[in-house]
Length: 164
Image (cartoon, rainbow, N blue to C red; front, side, top):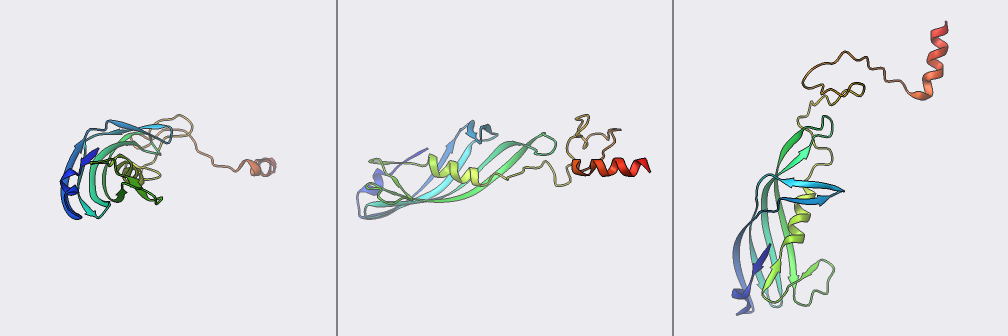
């Protein structure tokens, strides 16, 4: 994901729009593989101010996630904005290094995509999840398992009440 900015090198300032389409496929995220269902489309612009570049852009893609309740695959659209400063000297913490005539957008683009991933992705808000006893998907069919949610610390109290 590189932008070539040699057109902007001529003057002390300038503006250049860009559009990139990248096929990422997958990335490692939280010890899991994150799969992309469509190419990553990045539309933005680069502005040059003396020795630094300011890149702003919009990211559009679709990723495949797993529902945190029923473990089914979900397609999750991503729409993210990013802004990144580049400099040939790169002395500040939030500034990335500009390598000659190119700016590498991989880090800010991946970070922006990761920030858009929900903490607990759901296939639908009312997802019933999997049965903790038999493991069937409760969205597809109801199982005949009995669900008794008892705090293990109260088990002895329940036994006393059952004796009476």
